[in-house]
Image (tube, rainbow, N blue to C red; front, side, top):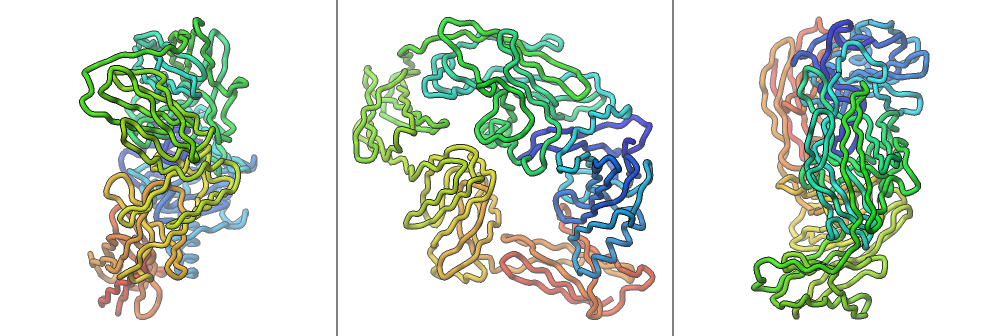
Length: 599
């Protein structure tokens, strides 16, 4: 049974497989008329096997286990149905905690198909009123609920294919005679798409596509369920987003072009299986969907995007093999030499512009040896040279008399535990930290520790130990913070041992030790004999805990982080609040604020 307004037409704001920042979206986001409080129905007979209330994530969620072993979940609820709500409240008072997770016995809270088990809400990490509905199996794999073709949801609209990308996957690969990822916007005719130009390529390349799906009567950009790649009439790749193991959902970073997602917010799904991707969603050829383009060969390429209701769109285009040649295209003359580099997979790409008519070689220094790096091609007066980093990590390069230090410290392989140490930090990667080989770069400048870059994903956390300048620091209030691309600062924590601090992180990028000595902010909103309400916040390290007492007895305070509001819920609704109320709020740095009032 559909959990919201069964038998009536419903609309979805989210579907299975949508790409989120660090996971696949699991299940459906069902619209609730832009309000909270709609009845939520059990999809089938079963029992409540798990219930959780938390500030973030799913918020208020119910798990119902069914006789066939499947589990349905109902998240972001405003409230639970009364017997369950009473049980949760009692347990919260016993444990003196707002955040709680409980596992009732199988016969404790039985439900029948269609029973009202709660009211829809906007709790936890929800960005607006809706019901998040999932179906899982015993192995905690996320099923696509639309496989059950609910009549409440109508979809005759095929997916959109906006753009495609092609990436060189080897040092000898070229796309339009360059070692560089390329993109093309598609042209649409009905449900068919084409490219405005023929694609010229050489060597091993990988395709990506930007696709979304829409359902009838809604403008939301939903996930496309299935993508299939055909080359010369033969299927070489397919992904179907269903039965996603919950513990592997973070590997979405390998399913997409993570660099594009982080830099531009654009989601390109790969049409090949990348290194470190263990998701069981794929069928592919022996090259995992990669395409080897031979000179003077023609490849008829077809990408098919299909949604859960079997609506499909097709993109067709031609790839022609073009043998790399040394090309030299010139634009305006260069007035000052310049050089830049980037690491693409295992390849160091150096782009150099100089004032001479003839492209200059680059002196590359590897382990004390000097190598001559010869340009592969010249584009707009910029010569491009390529070097395979697996041949040895370069220390620096010299061009037109100027030297550049790469800062490359170590090649860190994936799939094995690896340690690295220098005079200002220690790193420890376990065998599951990395998806692919990492060419580690680190730096320390003005107290900011740089470890790799923000655009490299980690699967499991790495261990970091640093020895910062502790002059003037109160170590009990000092911790490590992750510095994002903007002005944001995320609390990473850490444990001090002497003057060193150790922390774990799933982010690469910039980190700094900061001191937080300012206690949390508390403001009373209202109080009466029925309840009390506050605003609470913290400027830096973030809130850690909040507790209230009335005449010395613990009082449950519920928390909504989106409005920075906490409010009381009495265990016995018939007893009025009366007497001295004390609220204590503590942040992650250990600073504490206390607010005292009387009702």
